Image (cartoon, rainbow, N blue to C red):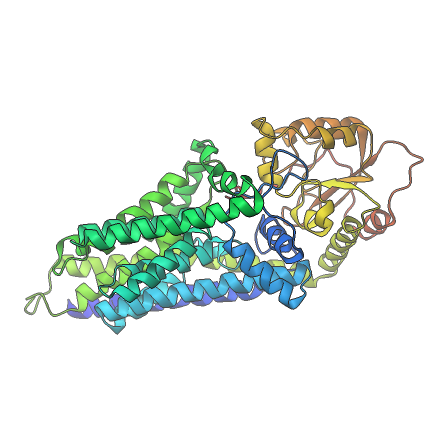
Length: 537
């Protein structure tokens, strides 16, 4: 039976290594993606771009230009600062952001690998590091321009340092935990886990000092931000608390975890048993095993949630998998010649739970490869050229346009009428934004073109959560005529173009050029809106 355990270990390492290789291959393809590595990426690039050119990223989002940024600032400051040093345009800035995210993925996997290796042995470290780099939430969020990846890397490193018996490391850990929280607010769960873990571990003074010191540092940062930008910095950091719960989104996310990454909940549960009951106990890791997955489950209840809420849980799962292997490989049990069935079952379970993620990684990478092949085809090159022409139109301030397409809005720069199409629609639906200026421009045909990622004449357009708000769609249909569509029905590339109804009004030259290039041209109203992913939260 001992041989079965080692066979299960070899299988675990092989599966995790293959998953990691698939993730890295997907990241290499996504890094050079000419559009978006994943949906909504352009929104995050937009905030990095605003830092790069010195524009504020926290404003009164109720007023034009509707800068709806409910994220903490550090990631945008880092990527935007690097973009300023490199004098980067939108495309180069996107690649800088992807590089920072991928580097964060690698750093986080390295941290959990080293931590598990020091605690449970080199084999455990290998298992933990590979699992930390191979989980469904990383496919496709891992190489994307977004703050989650940096926040989790800082958070797990800060947590492990903060629970150290050495005072200097605890100070370093506290600083990293503050930085994690100021990268994405939900990363504060690592700080909470560290405080709870220190208290449960019999070090309440250290836990209290960490809590007070981190709270004071975060408060000082928010206060300085308030002085520099006004109250909207603090308001924006708390705005997500007002997002309503959504049972359909929650069900979608939990079903995604069940089908694609069950290890993200089961591994921490196994780790909890070991950390809480096996001697020497590790109460800080037990707290982490409870709080991080629980926070992921609870926060994913809101509108717009997706598997990215479980990116942190992958690191806890990786540590737990390392702990399980350390338990299996240690000499603390007196098994004799027949190890208990429980140990064999645990070894097999660790390996088996990696299979759904392997299937998911193959699926995502297959899609990435197919997309790369499309870009290399004649039709793909024509589609990209049509997108480029519309980006060129967007960068021309003499031709005002309205769009719900993130990359086009990015190329509009400071002339963009809005920033985040998904949140803009959501806030309009809840009457927190009333875009009278945009409505007036539509009804007066002031926009030279209106470009949407979906068919505004389709019967489902008014309820589609990635298009313009319903009121603006109705006004567009009344005032503008469908002109043509680029790659209609294809969710990754489709754009639907609408022009003013006045037949004597010439279309911008980029529109005419894009019309000629569009590999397929069809009137709107006959195809469904693209079934895209959840929101950017």
